[in-house]
Amino acid sequence: MNLLPFLLSVGRTLSRNRIRAILMMAGVTIGIASLTILASIGESTRRETMKRFKNMLGTFDTVIIRPGAGKNRGMVTLANVDPTLRFEDASAMAQMPDVRQVAQIQDALDIDVKYRDRVETPAIFGVSSNWPELRGDEVVDGAFFSEDDNRSLARVAVLGAESRTRLFPGENPIGKTIRIGDVPFVVRGVMAARGAGPAGGSLDNLIFTPVTTASKRLFNRDFLTMMIVQLKDPNDSDAAVRRIEALLRERHHINGSALDDFNVTNPRAVMAQVTSLGSTLQKLLRVVAILATAIGGVVIMSVTLIAVSERKREIGVRRAVGASRLAVLLQFLLEAVLLAFAGGFAGAGIGIGGTQIVANWQHLPFLIQERAVALSLLLSIVIGLVFGIYPAWKAANTNPVDALRG
Image (cartoon, rainbow, N blue to C red; front, side, top):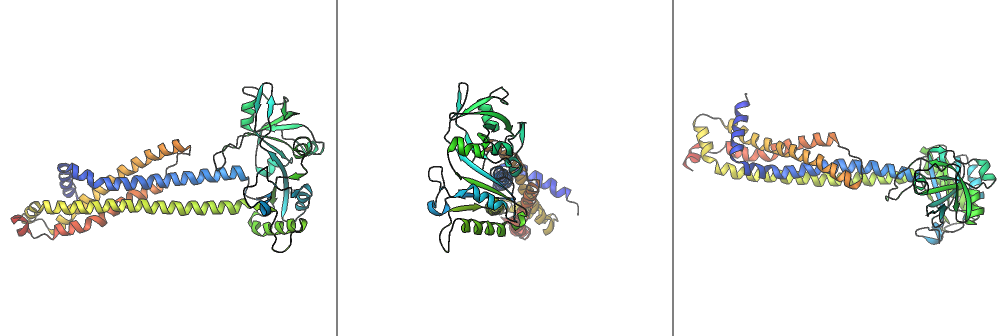
């Protein structure tokens, strides 16, 4: 069957009823645009969230241990942190068969750092020398401090990328002396930029010092505010976490149902939860967008039914001069499908433009889900077929005599 005459006839009909055609397209356009934007922005958000969580949590072969979960039962801050994690806990943990290495950490958020007439308040992290290896961070200028620096309480510092920019704009900081509080430190290196964390805060406005130096010379603390434990087998992380918890409970003399005085976070488990939540939310939003597109299909069916009633005489004339029922059905069905596809095509274009706008606004990577766009266009054709078949069938089964009389 030659479809060209049908297509030409459909084109002439639609051109004579432009307002009606636009109304029929509008619902599908909105639905497909929504579907394209939600699919693309959803994937961009998922990737950016995973990137930010990885920036904050480090590699996924680690677990993070913080103090105070038992007694405080809320947000652990420097003001209420329990002195429950000890250097000896880290040493004992490093001997476990599950553990590759342990990073010891002390931190503070309220210490002024001075260089000449500049004063900043970055986060100060006292860490062990294995921090870059364990976290997967890179030193881009100079070097990180060594284990000898840790043992000797050396007053050396490594700057985060933002701290370098704030304290040394346009200046090489290596070998320069800064004052953390009242204590002078020589800048040994600069870390690569890590970007933002999951909440959007900077992960680069910080300064690292040897943990022993921070403990004795800055904070006057004999306890740790965090430990990061690298596991030998990340796939066994759940069992390893249970063994780590058992070791700490034994060392801290916690028995029975007593609350732990520490909290263990498994980044792999956190990321699995985040990924699952993001996937569920994305599916829900896609269902909403598909429903919106289906509503556009209902609009197509309603308007096409009205058109069938208004064009009864045209249908009667076509049948009288020999047009078959199939020919009439195809004409009206093609009108519905072409309008739905045109609406889908316009919606995909609007969706791509909308994705660019939202990505720029939210500082997300611009990402187009080609598969989602293709499926959206296919969905628009299906919508045209499903919601156009009944009006087309009704037109095809119109009695030509009654149509000519009407």
